[in-house]
Structure formats: structure tokens, C-alpha cells
Amino acid sequence: MARYDFASDNTSGMAPEALASLTEFNDGFMAGYGADPVSARAADAIRALLDADVEVRFIYSGTAANALCLSWLVRPHEAVLAHQYAHIVGDEVGAPEAFGGGLKIVPVPGPSGKIDPKALQAVLDQPEQARFHAQAALSLTNATEFITVYSADEIAALTGPAKAKGLKVHLDGARLASAAAAGFEMKRLKDLDIDMLVMGGTKAGMLTSEAVVMFDKSLARRFDTRTKQVGQLPSKVRFLSAPWVGMLESGAWISRAAHANAMAKKLADLSPFPAAHPVEGNGVFLKMPAEALSRLNAAGWAVYPFVDGSARFLCSWATTEESVEEVAALMRTLV
Image: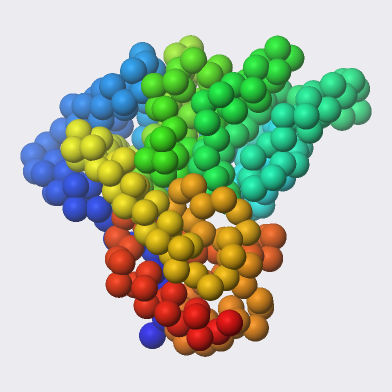
């Protein structure tokens, strides 16, 4: 039987705090479509975490949340700038383009998943022409696809030039809990010129729930209508928002991510193969020869090669020290 301990941070179950909260708010009758007190309480918990007066909506999936945000910020004849390996570029099957009716994503390079400020400026400096999509938004990811973590200052160095040119800013925070546990300052987000943020719940230990956060509250006008149109406004929104109450009010959204980060660090320390990227969050990317990875897979461990050729190991809130030690011991026999 295959072991999926490190295949993804989506392969674990629900964190106890999320599950308990979901069960707690299962009882009784409540208003639908997000007008319930549970969703209001969850939104308040997010406002407290961010120390910001924001609009909050709860969405089923990260792909839908990203696609909704980008199609809300960008018109069909406009472009989004994003890291060349961002999730919206290579892992969402064109969902942003489909939701946006023809918007284009322009890839920008940078090491270990972070956009290079000079590369971004070079793209921003390109003259606008009628025959090309006009730049309209910048999309960032924190933690990145390589689970490296932008500091608030690093984000500001990217959003500043983008805003100066009139671009909107979207932040994909599918693994924002991992970034926060690594030291990213959540209360600085409100000062970083971000228009729309997707806060990840699924990878943090919830069932299937992401929070769309609008720092620009004017963006909330008719947003619910749009989410309903694309099947992302369930009648029982409380089941998307309830886990957020348990995870945020208990502090588990960050503390569980801190455990995942610690397991990744332990795995990197025990691995006989070097890391291809800095280990800053809940992921380890190892320079493992293809033959060694194939033997690891044959031994039952579901671990996959990433876009740069490294072997990607992702830890979650449920990763145990025993599983880390077990896979590391096996890897030492593959050198």
C-alpha cells in the first residue's frame, strides 16, 4: 500500500481543531449563503489576525479562489504578471484564463519561486501596445511553490513598482500559514498594497475551504453574485467557515503549520541528499537522482519529481517524527 505522508500537504485529514469546530456548528438551523453567525465570527477572526478592516468570503478551492480573484481584478484583454512556476501558471489548467474570459498570464523569473525584482521591473518597463495584453495585475505566492517565504519587505519591493504602474495585486496564500509560522508578519499585509488575498485553509488542516480577503472593500460589490454564477457560493457556507473559527481562535492555524515546518526541517537535516532550495516552510526539495527516487517509489513512498527536477517532499500538520525518520532511513540506503 502506498504511503502518502509526503506526497502533498493535501493528503492528511482535518486538524482536530477544525474538525471539532465543524461538528460544533453542525447543530441547529442557520441562515444560508454566508449570512450566518458562524461565517461572521470566522471573518472577524481573520480581521483580528490581519489587524485590518477587510471583506471576507469563503470559497471551496484554492484554484477557484485564485481564478475568481484574478478575473475580478483583470479584464479579458489584460495580463497578470506571476512567477514562472506559480500555481496559477502551471497547475490550474488555465482556470484564471477561463474565468477571466481571455486574460493572459505573463511569467516572470526568479530563484526558488520568488520573483526577481529586476526581472519584474524589466517587464513593467515594456511599452504598452494594442496588439498585446495590457499589464493589469501582479500575482504573488507566499509561501512560494518551492515553499520559500517572502518577507514583508520583499513583497513591498515587488508591489511598490507594480502599484506605481497602476497594477492591482493578488496574493495566493494557499500556504500562508506555513509562511506565518516561519515568521512572516501577518499584520503587515494591510500595508503592502495587496488588493485581494487568498488565505489557505485546506493545506493548513481544514476540509476544503479558502478565504478570499479583500483589502479594497469596494471589490466586494457583486462579488457574491459572481461566486454564485460559477458554483462557489454554497447554501451552507457555515461548513466552509466553521473550521476557520476553530483553527484561528485556538491559534492552530499557525501552530499546526509550525509543526509541519519543523518536520520539513527535520527531514532536510536527516536526508543524505542535499536540498535544492532553502528549507523555510513545510516543504523539502531534494537533489535526488531519478534512479533513487524510482526506488523510493517502488518501496511504497509516493513522492514526485517537481518542475526543476528535484524530488518534492511536503509535510503537513499530521506528519509524524516517526514517518520522517523512516523515510530518511530508507533514503540513506539509496545513496
